Amino acid sequence: MALAIRLSRGGRRNLPFYRVVVADTRAPRDGRYIERLGTYNPLLPQDNDNRVNLNTERVQYWLSQGAKPSERVAVFLGKAGLAPMPAHPQRPDKSKPKAKAQQRLIEKEEKRKAAEEAAAAAKEIPAETPAEVPGTEPTEVPPEKNEGE
Image (tube, rainbow, N blue to C red):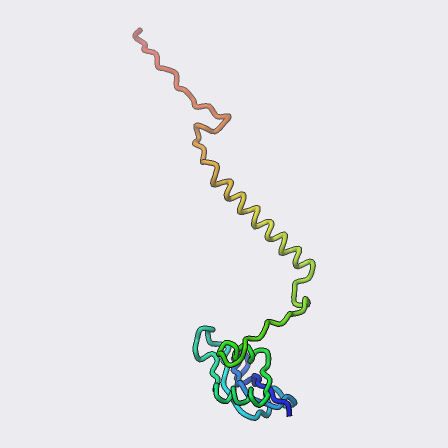
């Protein structure tokens, strides 16, 4: 019998809660399992101690019996120091944006850079006073004549 240490989903819709279990690889994901080893609550912040709870003694026992952890559980075990941290697998290129979407992202980035450069150039040029504006000469008031002279 091949054993797997994997997640079994519980909770309701939009509020997931997982049990870390040892199960036969042929059993359904949320179905029959041999033993419950811990819990995982993805709704808690990553720095919260209660996000992942593991019974370390039982996990070590099942690993010694040949149980293989799933990809996600292997990361939990690596962070807990119970197993070596797994290498990050290569993901296929299917998840990357397609050609048109990549082109739009490039154009958007170019527009943002141009706007930043224009804003930087506007800050470098000092604000001109109305007297210094070319094409407008200050008007001079002619001296007043004394009528008595």
